Image (cartoon, rainbow, N blue to C red; front, top):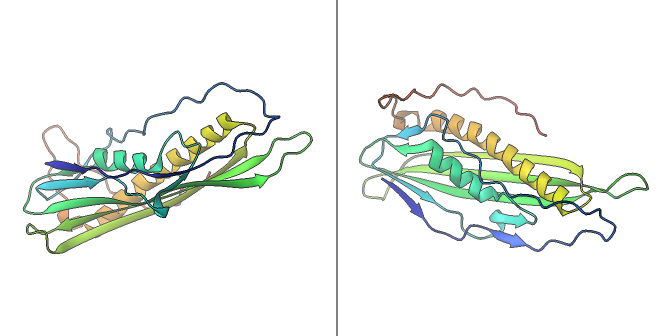
Length: 211
């Protein structure tokens, strides 16, 4: 059984409008969170999986434009990657950090546009709780950081860069999260495949590209 706890998803900050000399551009079409459903689930030996949505606070700060919310990416990863294989306990998944910030990297020149750096930090944690809900039997946490720098002539450029850095951070988190789960919750992973399902292959830790 999967339980999804409803929480306030993010804290948005106001965004300054584009400069008057920005060139007009077409609207940026907001994407949905990337899917991880093609990957083999991490099947935990618990009876209930409780996936909690993000609370509000500085750890969930999001500067606009943000066509793809960091918290939505973490939530989708948890829903796609984790499953309850059966057992007496409960697995609780928490979104700890889902930040998206930006700042000026360079001012506009006579022949070049201004540029900005976009930073995304994602952190999540899963805990295994005893059947009575009193004892934490195990836990695994993962954190990743990404940044992307690019020209920002207008809001369309900013939205595209924001979407790119969040997607890249989500890819990093997916790899790191599986690595940490397999490392710290190995005894809680169900290694018997369901009918027609392949077992997850071991994840090797590696340095991922930063841009």
